Image 1: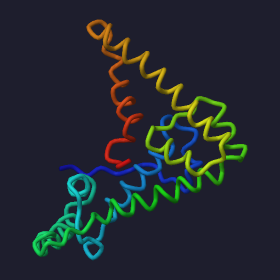
Image 2: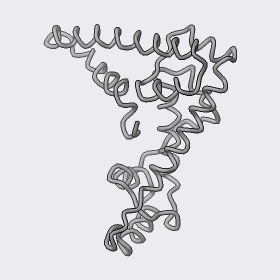
Image 3: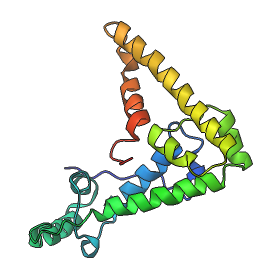
Amino acid sequence: MRTHRHLVEYCSVLDALSEGGCPLCRVLKEFQAFRLQNQAESDTRSLCNFHAWGLAAVQDAVSAAQVFIALVDRPAGEDGDHPTCRICEDVHTEENQRIREFADAIRTAEVGRWLNSSPALCIPHGIKLKKHVPLGYSVHIDEIMASTRRTLIHELKHLRDEHARDRSGWGVLGRAAEFLVAQRGLKG
């Protein structure tokens, strides 16, 4: 596999507001890529299917080999113990921190501008975020998701009905998948 590198480093979820799509997904994907690229042998007790393949794709070969040697040398589950993937745990922890960060910043001018632009949230992050914001903002999050839902349905129907003539609209399939379950590789 070839090595892939992430290009953006977010210090805050607010840094991702100016880009398209769900800002929580965007930040978490970059965090996950960073974790995969910096996975140390000593920090690995188990990897899930997705993160094992991700590690093979993004780490340099020597570092990835060290991690895999450690895992192969002490395979998980042989003694009945099934440790969870450390990267999954770290992404989940980061997700909770970023949701709280976003909720704490919901009344700021920066988030206000984002809310009044063309915001997007995936369903999993919208639902989680609603649990941490005041009711008025929870309603606004519902409106964001409803607007995204209407746009996607319109674009998906267009793709379904006009697919033979216009193949440029096929990106809507990825946007629909992200809206439903978050970006690829993130567990909701």
